[in-house]
Length: 372
Ligand SMILES: Cc1ncc(COP(=O)(O)O)c(C=O)c1O
Image (cartoon, rainbow, N blue to C red; front, side, top):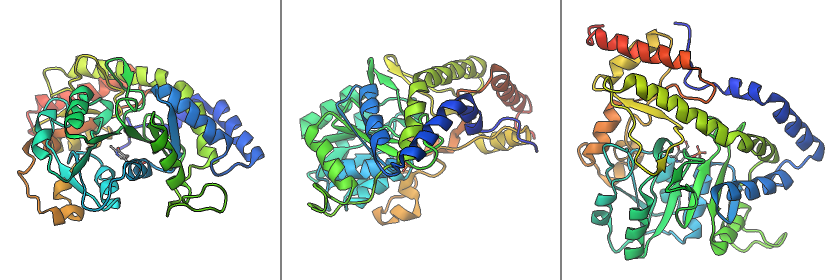
């Protein structure tokens, strides 16, 4: 079947800003600052200011951003870090890269984010930090999470890899905790033309540590203070991301508008996303829920509509984490949600006619009463 509606359309976005991107690339080629350099430094300043934070440290992936955030906070072997099982595996991997153990906490059935009422039950004398994930670009209940962290003297790292520009009580995510991590993977709301990520914090000491670890622990030149990493962002990505950052608010607004249209059409037919009052999602993903998800997905595929599942198998039952000895039923809400969610096409350049086509196809599936 010919693809009528892709899951996302990175080409359409490139063509909408082609001249700006092409000249930014050209400028970088002429400057030949290929690793870090002025474009990356300016991106750091601009992104920190965008988030309402003091510092940003650009790295070469969201995974690296999470890893360095945890290292800077002193997370080490034997420590426990609380997070959710329904996230991209990188959230848990970053904890494991520090030698610490991810401790999963179930989620809220409406928001799909960490259930803050269950966090205290997961805290032990080894717990050092909490990583709330702003899943699909929808902010977590940060006031409650920070309150628990304060009570137990824990650090909070926002996994904001899907949430560039999302707001909670009028403040941008990334400025709501000790330190936060963003991904610039190409399909993200702010995506590079390759790998990329950034750490955001207002804590000077944490920022300094992240900078040190990012580039082989070197400061000054030829003096290596800690065993670091090569997590540097490329200059070309810095230049591209600076161009795209200028458009981010407008693109996020378009995503919100698209989400509104989807919800208007689909309300009462499938379970649509619930965004709490004072939370402003950026709809990195627009996920519906349907009891017959796999059949619906197959039907939409037949109609030329590409969909996704974020994420199909929660981390606690992935082979990589079998050593934690979890079983199916340990996190019932995450498991239920995971079996029903379906991510619909979502990108700023989508037209209302395309959204209508997706919604009408879902309605058509409903009229077939799963008989197809
Ligand atoms: C929630 C979440 N955490 C972490 C990551 C890791 O980011 P990256 O792929 O840039 O390493 C991603 C990106 O896929 C993500 O969606």
